[in-house]
Amino acid sequence: MDYEIIDKNAYQLRIDYELFTDKIDLFELCKKMGIKVFFFSNIDFDLKTLPYYSKIENGFSLSIHKNFSIYINDNLPIQTQSFTLGHELKHYIFCDIEETRLCDVYADHFSRVLLAPPVLLLFDYVLSPNIISERFGLSIAASRNALNAITNRMIYMHLNLSSIEKEFLCHYLLRRYKMNNNYENFLLLRPVLDKNVDDYCIPIIKKENFNDIFYKNTLITSITNFKNIDSRDNAILTTFKDDKLLESYWRNPLKYCALFDGFYGVCTPDYSIYPNMSKPQMVYNIFRNRWIGVLWQTFGLRVIPTISWSNLVSYQFCFRGVEKHSTVCISTIGIQKNKDDFLNGFNEMKKQIEPDLIIVVGKIIPGMNGNIYQVNYLETYSNYVSSNTKNLDKYYYEGGQ
Image (cartoon, rainbow, N blue to C red; front, side):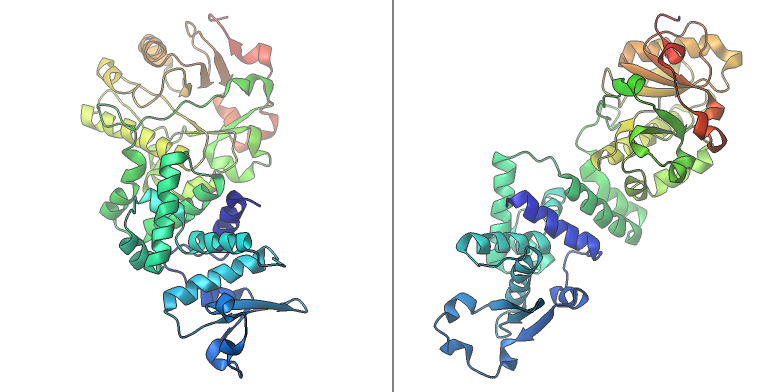
């Protein structure tokens, strides 16, 4: 057994029982789990007369004929009672037979993670035992131990979140997101978005590798079809829809982190960039495109930036927020009358981003070249999903061939 397994089970317990608040009631949780909890004050004899009372003075658990029950010292502060419940729940979940010293160390760790999830301490940068105690209902001593564990992780280990931490944080933030107003939501999500921005304050989407697209039976489909896809691990969702239909991704972006989980790739929303827009309007739509992409990427989705441009002014910012050599997605729909302008922007995109792979939704325009994977627009809709498979020699364009 190691700490990663213990952490995973603690987070999974919160997820399974939808415990997405800071403070949680472990007495109520035990009730839902079918575990009986008894108080020392209700026991007929004096436990202090037992020779091993010092080992059980906070509480203990018994398993008789597969019936698990926990006994809690109700003379102790409620924070200690709750921590003891978490400790004994670890013994229950892991079917501990012998309570060795190491087993108890693991149980204490499980209780701390269950009551004060480290991912929340990291996300909100909580570095005070007093705040941890007040926010999560731990004793000051347990809060110090939780803080020490976080400090050690920050100093000696990586800060990358595990998959179970991302899943829990997504659920947790979604609950908070629904309860807040827009300004509070902005403050809530700023820690995600302030990490890496350019001089336009546009969040930067990290490069993802999709070069094996040519060797997979890859399905390129509209984001509106995501519920109908049986095999997500080889499907990419595109977002070439009317702006009104894309507003839901901006209004409630966290919701889709869970809904799009498992897809081979998800393209960022294609908010329109028109020549008759003012510069602030265009920058705003580019910002939203990258903002959502960074947020989704933070919670484990494999993100492909959707790139669009309009006039020469847009070249200043429309290719920002994307790491060089990224895979990108573009559309050639509706540009038949402005092919030259489109090709100018296409070449400028290649110059600024130097994409390793370009996914093109729509027809290839003469003059386009590079490492291109193309799909017809109509094939991205449900009536065409079953036939949307690609042959390498048909859909690979190098040097405009």
